[in-house]
Amino acid sequence: GQQLNQSPQSMFIQEGEDVSMNCTSSSIFNTWLWYKQDPGEGPVLLIALYKAGELTSNGRLTAQFGITRKDSFLNISASIPSDVGIYFCAGQLATSGTYKYIFGTGTRLKVLA
Amino acid sequence: GAGVSQSPRYKVAKRGQDVALRCDPISGHVSLFWYQQALGQGPEFLTYFQNEAQLDKSGLPSDRFFAERPEGSVSTLKIQRTQQEDSAVYLCASSLMEKNIQYFGAGTRLSVL
Image 1 (cartoon, each protein chain N blue to C red):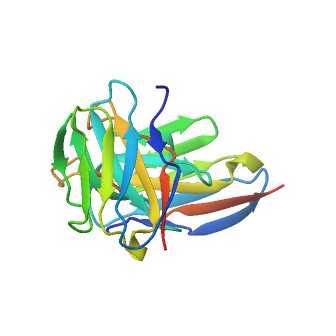
Image 2 (cartoon, rainbow over the protein chains, first blue to last red):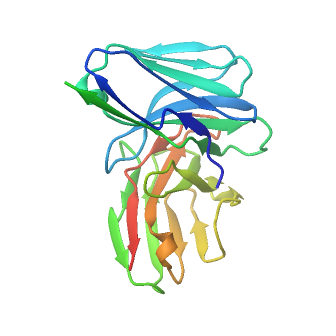
């Protein structure tokens, strides 16, 4: 099935460091969502983006809808141990004619105390 | 209920058995989505409903997969004659309308032996 390119695939960081991850595609999207998934749980929404260029924050998290509408970025500032988990982007295609979302391959984040 | 509820949480099936996975969406949510998440991957779209109408089933991998939502609330994903490659976590999500944010359940982990 179709999945978005997400990078990095995984990362180990020290507590207190900032984290950046991104999602790219060759297709244009109407909406970008960022989710976090803990083991054994469903994805939990972090941030939703609806317009090209939009920059939205949720606490220590900031996400941006790329100006080309083909990419999105998520930044986590001053990471803490509970940030550990898998982060997924999800995009809603502009031309799909449906409301399904395509998910990224995930970024696995591990925070070292 | 407060969130999306899925049952069972875990299901072990012998190859060739039929299984039925249940999803109780958030009360009042019009749209319901099913995803399949293989180990180490992001969720992949299977199908979605608006009320009782199945508007997109393009992600169903074969005719062994069937979903229904007869009264526009609870949905069931049925897999006939299960095969080992069907082993995955099946996630259900609901949203107020199609364009709105999707809220996920914890998923059903299906293991086919």
